[in-house]
Image 1 (cartoon, rainbow, N blue to C red):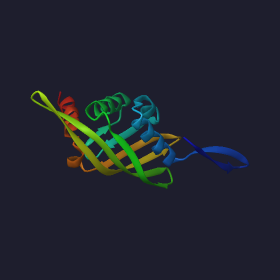
Image 2 (cartoon, rainbow, N blue to C red):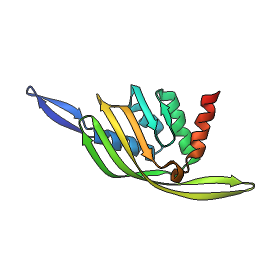
Image 3 (cartoon, helix red, strand yellow):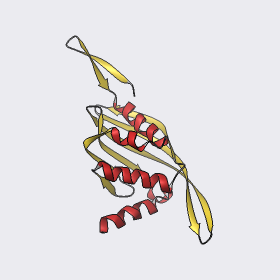
Image 4 (tube, rainbow, N blue to C red):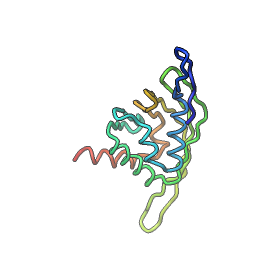
Length: 155
């Protein structure tokens, strides 16, 4: 992750660039490095997957969500298409590709996934304090992921 430097009262102060944090988190996701992803979140954070209507505020639950996502969609790759930055916020438009494997009896079928979405991230002191993903739930084929977490919430 790169940092910019600003001159504040004749002292160079490192400034974390929000877009770089967004890029760093997505790169760690693509490398399947969940611990690196979660390390970039503040202790007090909110992660919203708006398509699935799921919210996480605890790192343990976020880890579980990311692990289950990788289990269900093991070859998922997110490619940033464009980014925008405004103050402490970074906005990224992305393209996700991957495969969903479903069992039907003794056969397994692979269904390709290709969708576009966007993420809005708020950064404070170099850490993610708010993360919000927006995409079309139906084309994402992530219904099983939503169902897994809804079952956990009910019990």
